[in-house]
Image (tube, rainbow, N blue to C red; front, side):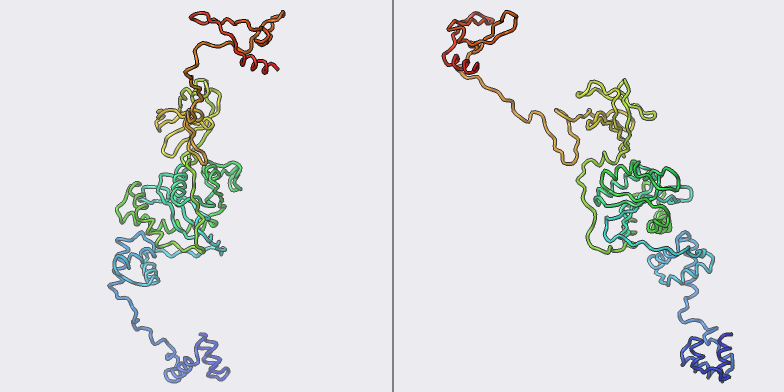
Length: 468
């Protein structure tokens, strides 16, 4: 109606044909052609001449039917982009993404997405790798509709590179610690860790409020010992980068596992490590803005102690330590007769083993079944020193004893002492020199016989100097 009204005004000389072309939004050449067709064929000449004619870029009907068949029978659970990539890589069908999207939505195989929410400002990526790492877990049907598992992912903020991805039964303190330790051993220490406010990351006194960083969790304590800052996210939108990454994981990984015929947790994790993480990084990783890395090598040799669940307990009178239903018997130590009443630290390692420490001393090692393992270790003289930073082991008998060898002229008979003692009237001893006694002989009794030896003149002079 707008086109017709504008043309009528131009024909009535109320506006020029130039103004009509500008109002309609076409070029002057197009307007001249329309004017000629209007004069020749009337209003019917203004219709689109392509209407009713097949497009030269029309997709053959057989190709369209094959695309819909593949999605309906084989790739029914893939998202549109993933299916578009499979068409080109696996079947050699190269179509535009828009055509595939419209075809699937028009056939009712894929539902149209709802409109996006309100506008939010995008947070810029960190310029260098190792400055900020995201860690999060996603519960999903990763291995089929009848199984729920958690996928723990550690991702770099600067490049979106995946450093760790593991399927576990449930996200917990131990599974998170295992992932962080693996990344630190492979890449090094990083600057900050960004996570949600899960109970294994932060302690929140009241739901929905700020976390209490003065009361760290086991993960918070480990990160503090390593000098890594922990940042809490207060909304899913704040973790938008990791949330979008999980959307990609959920739209691709279950389908890839199904196509590979994988249905067990161990095989799925092997598939992730040996193949899929590399493919995922090759497709979705972006280059960092700056060269270099913020990762730094760790010289800590006590990661096994840091990444352990630590709890303090008081030793009972029978030298046992109890935690829950588990009781550990502490053996006798050389540095203390009994540890009853002492506070010890129980370390539950990630491999299930348990170690008990009293200060720097390791007073017990136990297997997952509670059976003692190996000999007890202690620090100090004659003990084993735990391997920690900037500390070297000191071995006993590292110094030879100072001994004075006997000479040939020495005899096993003692000589007369340079100083002798006499008792006064009140019974207290009084020291006197041999010079006071004169040159009287001193009788020395041995086990075998009696021998009489006279002091030498040099000995008398030495004793006199000592008295002065």
